[in-house]
Image (cartoon, rainbow, N blue to C red; front, side, top):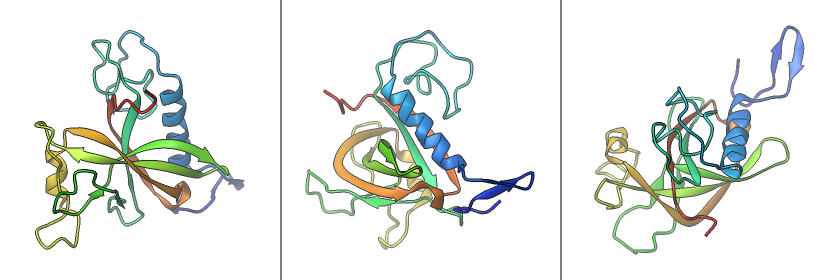
Length: 172
């Protein structure tokens, strides 16, 4: 099975991409966010309703399922965002919210600002500012919406990981 290619199952061409299907499901779940009692699984991207990924044992208002994408080499996909606070650091994130899906497997993703449990922005780059420091990802516990979006071909990614359901007030 190769990334970004149509896979053959049983000798028949299959034009479905698992990353496309998961991101499409996340979009559907976000669009149909309703309050429902707890669900049994805590880490599945297909978990419904929105809000259960974070707090399945209690009702929680959520409008976004935060996720990351991984390239075929296993590295996290990242995008830049415009920092409204104009702090002196690089504005790079690996966290996204799906906004729209079109042409089968293309999507517009909103770049989410990574924040720690104090609400402070987390700079994800290493000290040299050249690569994402994977250890800093552990410091991210919250997210904020940005005005930055990126359009991607979802068939270019090999993995999607759901992180957390949050309320960002996107539709308010």
